[in-house]
Picture 1 (cartoon, each protein chain N blue to C red):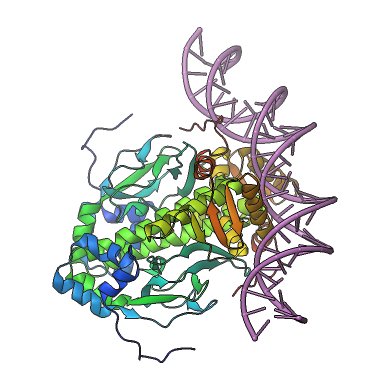
Picture 2: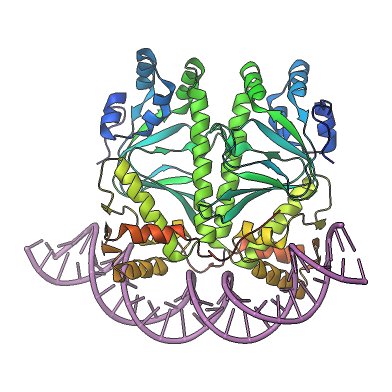
Length: 256
Length: 256
DNA sequence: CGCGATTTTGAAAAGACTCAATCTTTGTGG
DNA sequence: CCACAAAGATTGAGTCTTTTCAAAATCGCG
């Protein structure tokens, strides 16, 4: 099952682009307006890594940071470990998205990233990327921009976990996944959740039982149909409406 | 009250260092091992900004990003706005700490930062810092490292908000503040909370009433004494013990 | 000293969690 | 291909924590 070592050929950038229509490598290099030469240079540092089976770790918390990755197919979860072994999932990674950004600059990973299913990724050795970024103006800035995005996402998650009801949390996540699948060219109203209910709950700060119950409520209310991990939105407006009320419309928070 | 415009003199780096024993400007430049020249260069781009009164905004969400700041005295809070006006405090900033890092790279602020009391800050225009970082090797990397720290902190907060009880959340925050005050040379066991109960609760994802009740419980249990915003630890070990149990010791989370 | 804002307190209700049992799905071996 | 075991998901009932609403107390400031 595990493929040979370095037998895997270098993968070309346009292959990756083809593989995922909104590949973040594009995100990484496109806004910089790379010339032909630069694109080729970037091409050369991208490697296809071994496919991961479900449960395989892409990287572990504390490990020295060597590369960032982009998901070609499959999906991953990243989690941080609390002192007590309990862990908290901080992100799911779908095809076309970048992994490992939180480790940039610290020199080592803050989180452990693991495959939720059979997953293939591209590896972008960071030292090479860094080197390249010294040559290509704007690439360094691009890296900062992407890290910044990471911070922004974390804040959004915090908003959700700290202030929303179980129903809202799940609705928000489902709509978020919908968008991300949609961006990738897949259906926005019908898709397969790659993660378990346990993971779903963990990410949202809920017990798995609660997650399950919320699914049932959504089902009962006709908001969506659920068959195992298969999801279909039946009443998108209602779901979005759920998202929009912060559970405390009457309460005005004044400060300052 | 509002001081003259550019009348304020440039402030020298060593003044800042003196002002706060663990000033993050040190954090920013010290590990890079700056030479005398470089230090002076950095000195020259640091400006003392107007003092802020309670409630004054240092920067607002959405504003173009122009500078990072370091707190000389007083304190600040940063919060993100949800779509519905509800906001979430994502950080408190004490003397010696840097503000505005989450905006690096995105070009605009993600959060609004506001003074909790009369506060004075130093302004570090980012364009100049960026410019400087092209000349001083390592400074760029240092910026990345600091952003990375920001991500790490966010993840910690997420852990706390998502997985801990009200008691644990407050204990963790109090101990964290204690450390930060201590690092600054103040007492670790007795200090003044600069923020309101409302803010405290908001940061921890709790209703203000709950925050208040937890204080009472701590008081009753003899863990600390509370007089308004004045705090004193009476049983540090007990507080730390609270911190260490994730509320679910029997439950082993296995995955993979 | 008085007023407004913040904080505290109480009681009731809601929401989420735990525990335990059942049902389903998945994967394995016969 | 089917049976079985193991893991994951669902459901139910009861409990506990936290929130909400309302009111009293306290604090801070002019």
